[in-house]
Length: 114
Length: 113
Image (tube, rainbow over all chains, first blue to last red; front, top):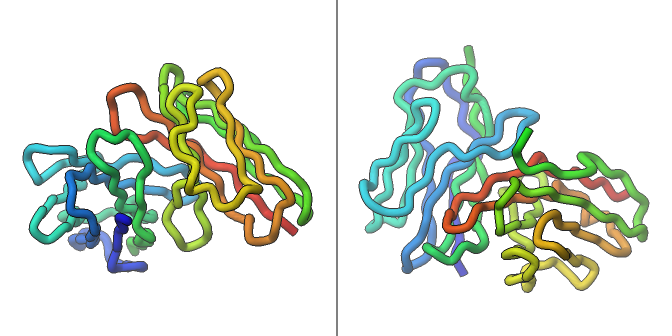
């Protein structure tokens, strides 16, 4: 069964610091990869996604992620975080073209200090 | 608001009672998904529908859990004989035909006393 691991459960950064959140998945087939964000009191929102093509994908609010197939990784990055980025971040995977379930990682709670 | 909506947003019930949650997907989205999220964890897939057909239900947590989508529009998730371990956030998501991205609703938070 496929699984998703997020290495950092809690991250605390100061504003303007750079961010990298790790995500690894275990599945040998073709997958779709997602990062979702959940701001305090809000529902899950899509941050960015990778289906195919350029392995460096750009999302909303200055976030980007790089798919490294050989490492089964899809790490999320942002060069300079803001206080408003305080949220919980979830990596998710599903099978390509299967239109089915997402498998989520356990989430990383990010706190940005002003 | 044209996003996924869920009702109720909060539900408190006593152990042993039955509860039913409703999800209204985004208009024209043919796939609808149910997930459960417990504190400190990522969402866990339960079941999904394509139109009115339930295509995957082996992940429902027990036979106390059931879901329907009778007309291919809204869906209901029922939990019978609730237990304290059922306390969680129940999330609904939908996606349009031909697209893999799932759009999530605000969830129903269930507390079983």
